[in-house]
Length: 261
Image (cartoon, rainbow, N blue to C red; front, side, top):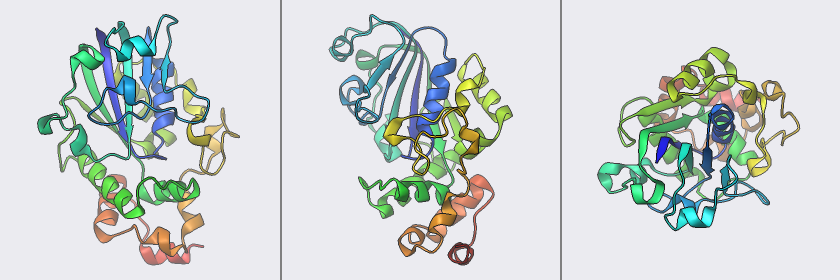
């Protein structure tokens, strides 16, 4: 039996690992994290290591055994967190057959879907810097648009209790983080907000050099480095820019992007 199960959905380089690390650092009791699982599978089986040498499963209690959990011998957890990256939300929609099977994860007193959304101008700059290529830029743009519509309440694919998280607000506002911690039932102390997770090599631009000083990273200026890159600019269709303006209240015009370099 899990007390709280949190399913985190976001795009690679959206800040989801930083937010997950922050959640786990404030979660009391027995915690377990399953990284980057595949929709429609057993997350204990399909979870992937965030980077070379790191485990795909991370638990805070010594008796945790990933093989036994995958076989259905589930241990009690206070917080079970499992994440999904770069996926269309239909693959996680319970109404479309993507059931959350208690036999795989255990029954949970509370189930929360957390969707992390980062503004697309800095997100796609970070993805290009990190050479994220497992999905095409065009497909990544479509995924972002679907996530943005969910974030804005224009579509509904995720579960009954949903928490929409703006990475931009999370990275810039302690008050925002305090409200989010309260919604997730966390014991807010916020220390982990300055950590830079090692997943995927850390920041696309700074690696892990600024861990402990994450506020020094220029996470809102990444777009300027690609402002004259035609491939980068090609993702910004009119619908995507309109969604960005609605979600974040800001979007440079494509002309301004091209002139900013």
